[in-house]
Length: 87
Image (cartoon, rainbow, N blue to C red):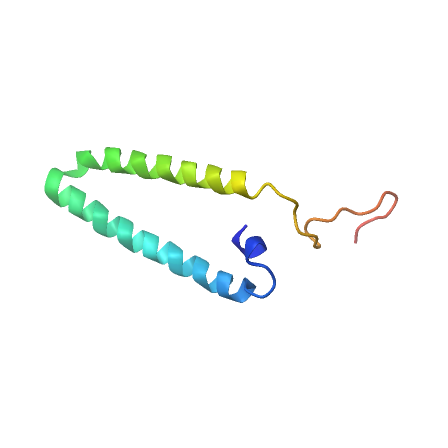
């Protein structure tokens, strides 16, 4: 979805930013998780984990709601005409 939203001019930048953001999220999650375990023990991880899942679900729902406009045309979004066979 990010590549589609970035457009042709920023696709390479978006492609580079995605793995960087994943790695930053993993590092931040590991740091916060180790802090929670250090302070309150492993049993305390369920609350922050549930909050992250709920926040992520709300974020995805918000993005999907805001991008329901017309889809860009391209090979992955166009359908073959009736009677034509795809290769």
